[in-house]
Image (cartoon, rainbow, N blue to C red; front, side):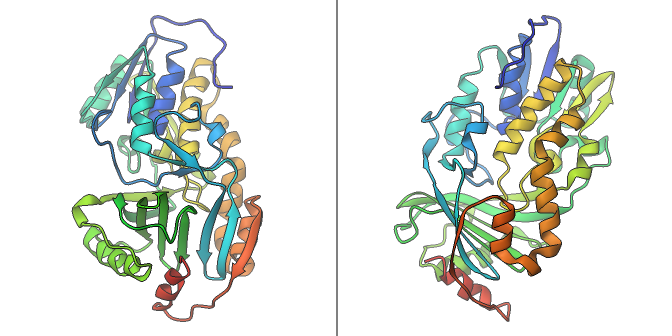
Length: 356
């Protein structure tokens, strides 16, 4: 499913900036066609690798990874989603809870012909230099990527987030991952075990990390979870785009083809917020389309059309069809459990209580 049927090209250089799911997937496939692969990551694949991310994926079989590798925690067959029209249990297709840091460390260790440059600070000047040295340059630098300097890339949705993996008593929530969407907030809790979970809070307002932290403290207190220390959390941005953004995913720089992959082009599913599978698929597509002489834009369009078409329509009609209808559009089997009708902003606290 992930192989390229072609002989290796020894004089082709592939440089990848960004070592998350998109970058690792790109490097894995690039090794099949060339021995000259360089992967630049701003972090390291040793020690405690963490970041501002969630740790659940749908459709794990779509990832180019075996099951039960380091970082594969457990299966997750259902998730709890809470919106303005109630609490809904959704059967998750091939859902898996991950320890993403451990999974990425394992993934990197399987790359046999990729030179990994850790703790790499690639700025615009270095990016230009890499383009002059490479045949294919993949920008997988996440939200607000380096390629913004060279394209008109922008996002439909850009929400500041605060997240991290913490130890606390999650036994009253385990094992289902839970997500709350209410007005401008979305809160998620993904239990790794009864005493550890990934938690995160995002807001569609332009709030500072300090403001988000105070909101998180209040919301976690409502579900009897001891708030973590601020320094244990990571600031990030959750971005999403419609299909039109794909027109910016490929360009030329110094006679080098540049493909933008992963969160950098806002491939996260706007309905669920899950973007890791989309990121990996785009990393693979960035390599495959170049080697096979195909349009990277067209390939991404085909891969993401259903998700983007549906979730792009969902946003304006959400108040008409509700969470139940959205879940049906997402092709998920759901069980309607409980309803409430929030009238005031303070009702978010009542919504959070439904978590338990």
